[in-house]
Image (cartoon, rainbow over all chains, first blue to last red; front, side):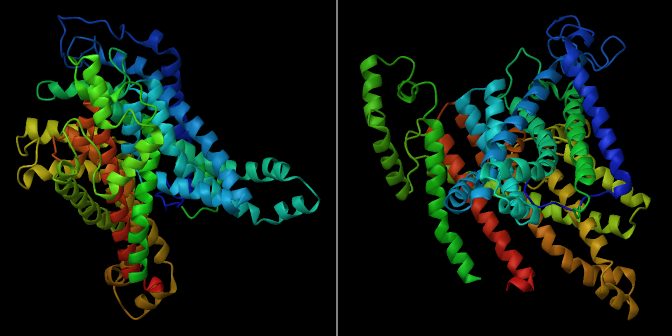
Length: 281
Length: 304
């Protein structure tokens, strides 16, 4: 989440497995997101009052929920909204974070101080609290969730980019580019920007996992995608009232969230080893 | 040390004013009229106008902003319709429960994470290392509230070992603490393992071994103190997660803290209360970070 890279748990030898494992899992979820409605064995909102809260069976692999809907189908169809929230918020936060970080790091001076002060203030608000406050304003829907998650991601990302820009600027090739008379904008776009991308890509794939977690948590709290649209967090929220009689209802959606977060985490860790072999992690 | 303390405490009011300003700007975009909400569903137009005047919502935005800052200087968070007045006392009475939850989560994370990391580092590339590393990857992917639900299903519903909701004795503390601490346990385990493996290659470790100390004594007496610094750093970096995560965990376990109150405020559309609680969270964040920084200076002789 922040600019400090933590030593992580694998040797370089294992890292390709992380990347491959993450990529395969992500591809699996991408297929579910793209073709979900066609792949689901049942209609996600088809209620069947004769099969309420049924445990997993050959007809319903993950069982049925409190109004008899097929849980597996709802998970498959719900992939799309979770994945689009994750991708949209990460893309928006990436663009805004890079713009702010490049501006602050490259031009320095007053711009740097002002942007840094703003980022530091935003960082004092815990991101889940900020997301809840923003959703309260922007509305509990896909748009509100995306805005909330984006806003809570921008500060740490911009700080990361700024730190990287400062590193790149100390490199000889930047001095050389300036020396031969390149304009600020050209140096920024041709030399500084490309050298920040690998750090950003790694961070964004880890943030995508965080986005999935925040979206699920807000859905669980009733502040996310609203029913009857199937969404993993909201499904978990609804399963809570039947936890005593039908705990299996909570297992499928929770596993789906965990696997998708795992996919993004593995991809991020694998990318870090691949793109940034000098990192101590 | 005192200089840092004074500087950080002196900056705190400035940061809070900045946070209030940002929240003020964000909340200007709320669709819907606060006066209508406060006056209630049966209010007439003139009653709504009267409430709007009482709340000061008919004044220019800059005046409202000035009034808000003025109130803040007197420890007044504004008019909360839910509590019919300044919500600060009602928020503060819920702070101890949240503090208890986060403090016990940090404690559990250290008590479980450090030994796990040491154990993995001691058997590096062996099966205990592999098992602990796999557990770390797993814990980082699992949502805290789902972990909490699974704990409830197992220990409260199936086994009847633990009470599932509320704050009522030490037993009720167990499951919320585990749910909140899981991510931090994994992060502390991971960093401990990494740092210990790195430190083991250093000269002072070779010296300790050369003078005849056993592996275990070297690890605990010489390596571990050096690993404390990054561990404290991780805790500092995760303060935001702990406070934010406590909101969801509190709701799941009906824990009477400020996170639970925040969600109630969102449900009631009491935006004064939402902003007030956010400010209290920021104060908590700043204080925990200050404590971490002081601890950091205490254990790192280079910064003394």
